[in-house]
Amino acid sequence: MANTSHRALKLLSLLGSGRRWPLRELAARLGASERTVRRDIETLRRLDYPIATVHGPDGGYRLGAGHTLPPLRFDHDQALAVAVALQTAPSTMFGLGDDAARALATLHQVMPPALRASMESLRLTRLQNYWEFPAPPIDPAALTAVGTAVRHRHLLVTETLRPDGTRPESGDPDFLPAHRIEPHHLVVWAARWYLVAYDLTDDQWRVHRVDRLRPRPTTQSFAARKLPDDDLAHFVMSSHDRGDTLAAWPCTGTARLNLPAHVVARWAPGGSVVEHLDTDHCRLTLGTWSWAGVAGILATFDTELTDLHPPELVQAFRRLAHRWTTIVDTAQEGRQCDP
Image (cartoon, one colour):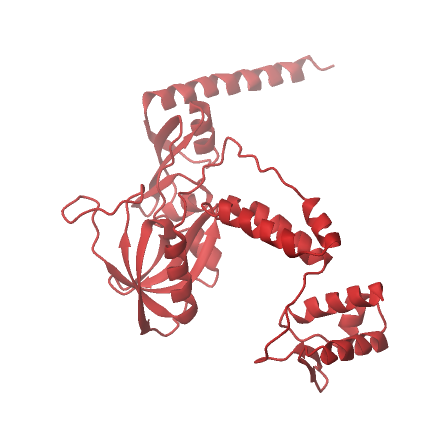
């Protein structure tokens, strides 16, 4: 009976994914015969789960739409996935740590003892390394407003905030008037939330940092547009003016690179700023915990560097150049001494 219940629960979780499942594939995933799977499906139907049969060569089974389902229970694998997801969510959704912890505690209370033990066996400790610099916390209300607008294809009126989250007043150098935008996609990259939107004020596609927006929802609908790039990830990563701001590091330097801004933007670390200069050059400003770290990251772009600032960065390059020259000379002397 326990095996039957576990198999039916897993069958229900597979059907709950929303896709159509051929009988042969269900049997393979459950490790049971097709006859047994049919019997389990009939059992679930008697429990009022609306499992529809799709006839034809591409037929199978799926959960029916438009019905009220009884409460679904997690199977073992789902319980582990939820435990890991809720404990690691704060690393990509900053500001939701307390909410994720409360959600995990609530799930523990309603889980059966066996599943609760599995979830509690995955107590994680997340450590921040030297290279991480999280984005500012996301206002849940702003994230909800943007996500709802994306889902329902409703226009947004947005204002751009300062990096500290304050609103610049009219007349301030960094003040921008409100824009009307069509929000198309939310993207999470390097622990930062970005919105891909068509700006009706400027008549062009833009990438916005969600934590830098103050959105005002509307009920005005818009039609879907062809995206500016077939690869949405490439578009976000190569957009240098996506609203990124400089992170606070002990050492911050800048250099002019002989590379286009869209190339550098894709590989620059989080918390850095890429400035477009012309089609073949850009300026990169970044920080790390040491001047050698700033110089080392700049060197990874394998291009000519000019206009280095401040003097501490120039000194770091001199020290590294001397160190690397010594390493090369020592290696050459070693090869000459080999018999």
